[in-house]
Image (cartoon, rainbow, N blue to C red):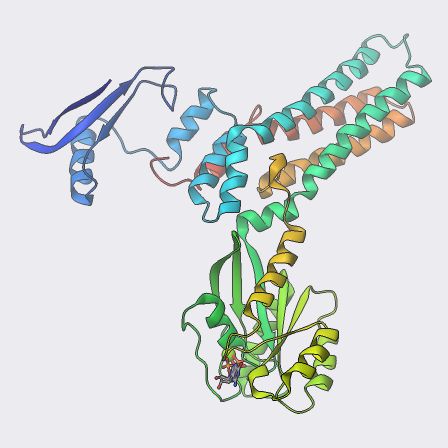
Length: 408
Ligand SMILES: Nc1nc2c(ncn2[C@@H]2O[C@H](COP(=O)(O)OP(=O)(O)OP(=O)(O)O)[C@@H](O)[C@H]2O)c(=O)[nH]1
Ligand SMILES: [Mg+2]
């Protein structure tokens, strides 16, 4: 029952007009007896009420403590607890959708199913240890191996979703690169819809890189404006170029800008592209507005896979955005299945499980040492249980919940 009343201080003065609710043990978020007080939202009123409560003997909760209590009370598993933090941190539609699926338990159920299948196999192997006179027949061994294969396949597939899951959680990194004066900072500002980077006609304007976040079609994208790459330049510019190389290496995609109004741009581009081998690149032919007879040029650029573009007139913006989005979507996971690994911690545990399963499978195939097989299967089981929190220790919990904000 939600009650209305006044919150009184120690000196009986009214601090605020509030509503309060009592949730009994077992029927609250934490699973414990819980009271919630709804006051006005101002900073000083909240602090005043908090001070009174603390003076009466309470203490302020640590980051994530409410969710940690819910986990310890067995109300939610670790994947759901972590999903709470993901939901709070989600700042695009896709990251929210992934977090919500984790919260709803589809992901947990998938891991639990793998676990159950693993437990079944383990039981049969351990029965073999206890009754060594009943050796596995070839057919039986074959059957267990193929069941193990299915589990391993699932673990592999799940681990593979992380490359897309990481995009959802940490964002997609796009470096804007090219020769000096190509218009990189102009494009950066356009994508950001804000005059963030300095734009001048002098080549070598950008030295230090600039990094900002944008939402592109529901994806969290980190765009980085870099120093133009060329031979020479002063010491500062050279340092900027060095950092640009590092940014290219760590980015998921490179937007390579070329000033197609400059002479011999094609030759330069050919040489530049060679240095980017192995990277996902989108070539942008900037300053198309400076060219007359742009139709023939457009066709030529199209043949070379270059997006005709102008920062000045914004021509080509739609095509460019669609092209970028298409590339992101190729990598992004299908969220409808709800089983996407977005956490580096989970991926690490899945990899650990896979390593153990590999050893176990080898032993099983050779019909060797059921003790070792069982040991490895148990280790794999532990790794899965550490994802859901069937097995945990204070260190794991500390790491997970310290990332939460206070009050969650
Ligand atoms: N006509 C025309 N000029 C452009 C276009 N894009 C950029 N410019 C001009 O080109 C010059 C360089 O633009 P910037 O955005 O500073 O180029 P940058 O690649 O960041 O240059 P650095 O930081 O020096 O490497 C500026 O004078 C811009 O106004 C375009 O599409 N058309
Ligand atoms: Mg610049």
